[in-house]
Amino acid sequence: MRSINIEGKSREELGTKSAKLLRREGMVPCVIYGAGQNIHFYTDIRNFRELLYTAEALLVLVNIDGTEYKCVVRDSQFHPVSSEVEHVDFFQITDGKPFEAIVPINLVGNARGVRNGGKLKFILRRVKALGTLESMPGMIDLNIEKLRIGQSLRVSDIVTEGFEIVGDGGRTVVAVRTSRNAVDDSDEEEEGEEAAAEETAEA
Image (tube, rainbow, N blue to C red; front, side):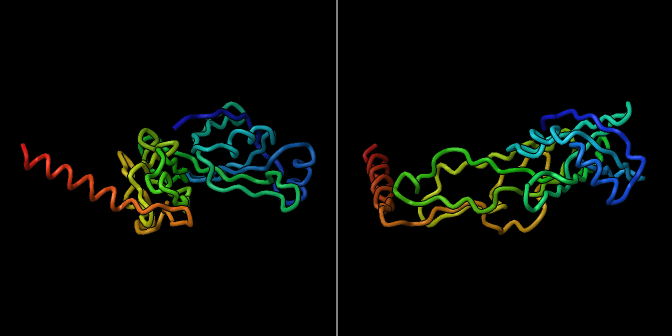
């Protein structure tokens, strides 16, 4: 899991009025929880350009008035019209203790079914993972090379190492659907198996 650093300052005043004033100044009210008393702070909105708009889960090293906290983003709120970030919740990580993080799935390869005219449906793009800081991935790779038309891969098909995925293992992650231009590749596979069997027999 890659890390990113942000600087923050403690919030002396809480409440809606104070939060609005901070946002007018280009700041974002935030909170850190998970390891005792909640820590309220604010930071420059520009710090979230990479943090929230990225394709991977990140470890966030938050420095507040000289004290550093290891965190992950747990939740974020955006303005309904401007879509600017308005509030961010961080979860503090304790070394060696498992924690949960939302991790994106990265599809690897070109599915066989797509090469034969099928349509790829990427249904579940992120999953909740449980692991320690040392084992938590920034992204989970899922190989789809052998996926044929009509087939799908589920959460339970994801290979994990040092971490586990929380939730229903039967949820579909990706599938290949048929289309008008799809080619039936079952005959191709059967012919390949028959040829292999004949070669084995001759040998």
